[in-house]
Image (cartoon, rainbow, N blue to C red; front, side, top):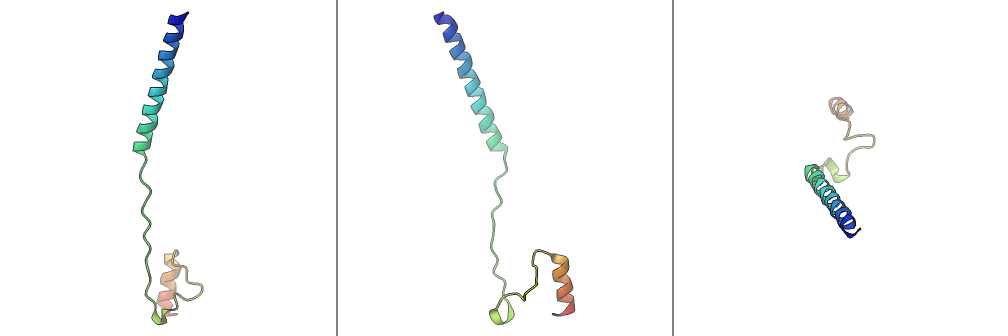
Length: 69
């Protein structure tokens, strides 16, 4: 009986080690989170962008810039 328990214990230990190796490998494969950079926009008058200007929408921003508003 002691031999069977020892065999089961060894098998469980090997599974734990295999699981840990897989987990570490998966962690190494993940890409690092991108570094967020903040940009201070210089504006005329120092009051920021005008209301309604969406800096995340480049087409709308270009349209506003072409209108000159």
